[in-house]
Each structure stands twice: as structure tokens, then as C-alpha cells.
Image (tube, rainbow, N blue to C red; front, side):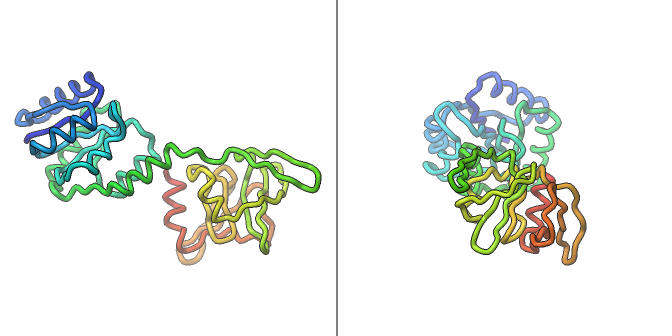
Length: 251
């Protein structure tokens, strides 16, 4: 099995090569490369059976390699990114190794490669979208005006946000109801998805606001929030969002 290691940390690249040789003596590392530029040059002239690809290289994200050279070779990504970003790899059926790489996990990834072979697929656009979200600066505070009074509210003070008639309100953990000049559609893009989730058309919740969850009809989930929403706010996760909600809670 001929292997290419694309990794800008020489110690990490050498250690990966050593582990590969310990696991499979027939494994042959043809090259260890540390940049996007050199990777494009090398891949334009050579072929291998498997590529180990670091996400962050010395001259940028390794995804740009795919924009410059056509790669059909199976790839195992290596990354130091957190579990939120890792979901992108799982969705796209791409093998990955979280740094520092453990020998047992490397063995499992090689076995997956041997089982799946060319079935490995790389959806570059989806991966780029996820990693763009990683660097996006999400809203951290709101400046709210009530009459002549202006008030700052940090996002971590917000329990939930709901739409009522044609207005949108935030409710803080100390049970203050305040109007905001945003639609829920806009807030979905402005607030960190790791902490906030829109459960239906009229309600977005902070994960810390969820007190209890109850199984509901049609595989849905009904939430009890703190502070209490009262009867006028629908706290049932919509059918179309139920699966995403469960994955969000379990991430």
C-alpha cells in the first residue's frame, strides 16, 4: 500500500509513518509534504493508494488542494479541530483521526479503508462550509432600546427567543422579556449553533435553558424551559427539526 502523508509538523509526520509501519509492514510512505503548494505539485505527477491529510497546513487549509488538482484517492483526514467540526466528516463518510493520533484509532481507520476502498468520498463544499463556520464571529451581545432606555444583553444571558405576532422577543434567564430588531431567520445565522437551536418556526432555545424533555407524538420532543414559557409559546420541536435537534443535544 503506497501512502502520502500531508502534514506540516515534521515530528507528527514522522510519528505517523512509524505507526503505519508498525501496523502494516507492507505500507510504503512515498512522501511527507507540509504545504498546499508542494502537495499540488506532487499530486500532479504521482499516484498513491491512500492519503493522510492534515487540515491546517503551513500555507493554508488543505481543502484548497482539491481546487487545483483532481483527487480520487481515498483520504484519511488528521485534525486538531473539536467535535463540532468533526460532525462534518461523519456526515460525509470520511475517515478522520483526531490529534494526537492514537495507534488503535489509526488501525481502525486503516481497516475502514481496506473495507470501503474507493467508497471514501470528499464533499469539499460541505467541509469548507463547516470550517468557515468555525472561524465565524457569532453575535455576543444585543443593544436593546426600550423608550429612552438602552440596555446591553449578552447572548449567554438569553434563555430563549420567540416570535409573537410580527415582533421578536428575547427572554433572559432572570425572566426579562425584551424586544429585538431581528427576525428568527436572521438570528439563526447570528447566534452560535453550538448553543442555540431553533426548534420550530416561532422559538429558538439556548441549550442551557432546557430543564426537561418529554417524548411527544410523531417522534417529536416537548421541552420544559427555564424560566417557564407559559401556555402561549409552543415548545414542541417540529417534526422536520426533531432529528437535527436530537443530534444537536447529543453532540
